[in-house]
Length: 215
Image 1 (spheres, rainbow, N blue to C red):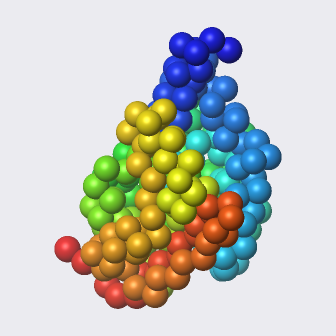
Image 2 (cartoon, rainbow, N blue to C red):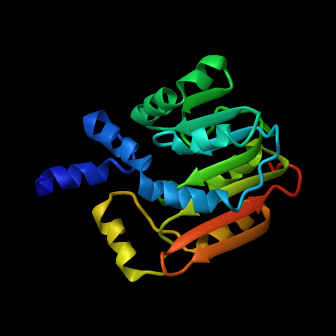
């Protein structure tokens, strides 16, 4: 792959478009991301009939996992048309049945009513959320009381080499555990727990809606 094409491909990480975007979202369904997702999901207890949302659903693999973990509704949201299409394609039988829906949407303003979900997940996506506290407030708005928001990333700022991604991918910002916790607290989440695999720079943050939705 030429250096120009490689740079174009890296740029697809934030908002996949076109053929390169399709390659990117399918790559997100690959083994490397599956290992991270499995570790993230190990921190999550999913009630039998939980209604779930995966923000930044990418290629749809994590939606497929959630569909196998609950009998409730599983929705996806992504601001990439390519990601939405690929997610629907991967989960086409559940989309046809109506148990799964996928929306073209920005996390800053999600198309859901207050208290719609028991669980919201965000895998490898908050790197691109500019107003972290504002986005977290929007997540809190759509979570039911007692609902859980889980963030899972493969870069948390403990390995210096990972900051090279900030130089290579426009709009990407690595968030440390402390930054994520501070933003969640500012958004009025409670019961925040953080787990990390330091040698891999993995991080999983789980936060609960412990109170009524804030204005």
